[in-house]
Length: 108
Image (cartoon, rainbow, N blue to C red):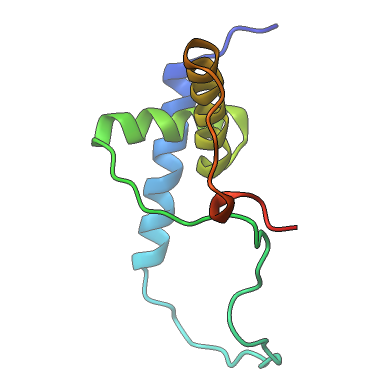
């Protein structure tokens, strides 16, 4: 397996974000009317079985998390779910199985 060039890849990743910000700040020369398409009501529910939550992280930790996501080609949600699964499995090996109340079990 080839060794990853973390420094250069991360610099390119950061520069890409800077270029997108510059493009967003540009004033368009002329607005062209766009065709309107019929839209559904609300956002599509891709994963109805997921619970939503909000977490906060120190900036350096969030930067590392985003770098991992970039390298792995995964979403933050996927990387965090993998990390939580690993931590919970280790916890259960040390302390025994965790009993999950019925309201938090998968609804099938």
